Length: 230
Ligand code: ADP
Ligand code: AMP
Image 1 (tube, rainbow, N blue to C red):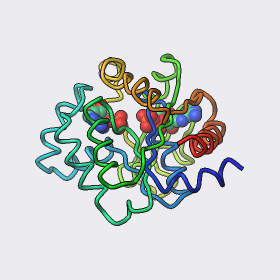
Image 2 (image 1 turned 60 degrees about the horizontal axis):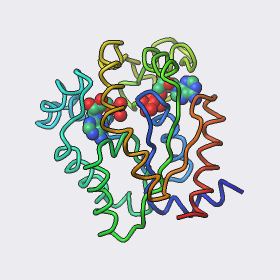
Image 3 (image 1 turned 45 degrees about the horizontal axis):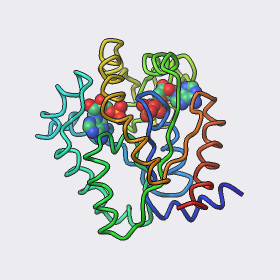
Image 4 (image 1 turned 180 degrees about the vertical axis):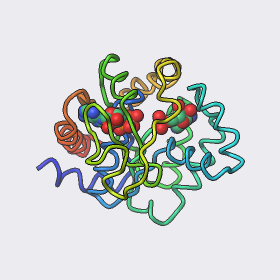
């Protein structure tokens, strides 16, 4: 059974890799909850820093608003602090990290030092025309960062989160002109990671253009396949 096989694998880090809007956050929340491990979204961590007005938030805000990537050293410090916490001892799901070759190499070194074994990488493949609809329609809860889509996954009550009633907002970087920059950043800086992890045989790919339920099943199957391989 793919889900049972995957259970053991979650004792190690899992990376959801793919373009912005591919559905990584949606699936990471479901899978992390299923296994009782933390969902680590570097985008959410940065947005929290912006919201709380930290020094990191002040540095990151204009970069995120332009659709560019935040410098590696800032991201790596933030991630290292997060995965050192006790709740990460039994695995975690990364969403939106690593995003550059330097981040991937630094993560390899951290995991080697921790003796946690290589991360299992799931690559979310989605055609570009679907990404635009997913990102322009995305709405996010201000409180718990729950993810909706006005076209495909609307909340029960317009503008309110089903989980905690929080206000749903549109991310400032989900405007078409910023989306275009983010896709360029993905193609030039992040997509090379597919070949990097494929070369290590720690990557499995899924068709992420299907329904949320179908994609969740594909993720569990991919985790099962990776469990047999790495
Ligand atoms: P990412 O974390 O990869 O940027 P999200 O998980 O935030 O992507 O999803 C982007 C948007 O697409 C959200 O509005 C979400 O509700 C929607 N979405 C996610 N997965 C699917 C799917 N399989 N089918 C249709 N819409 C989806
Ligand atoms: P996301 O929520 O994953 O779509 O990320 C939103 C924005 O946060 C990105 O467009 C980047 O500006 C920044 N960001 C998130 N994760 C990273 C990362 N690993 N490296 C660099 N920048 C990041």
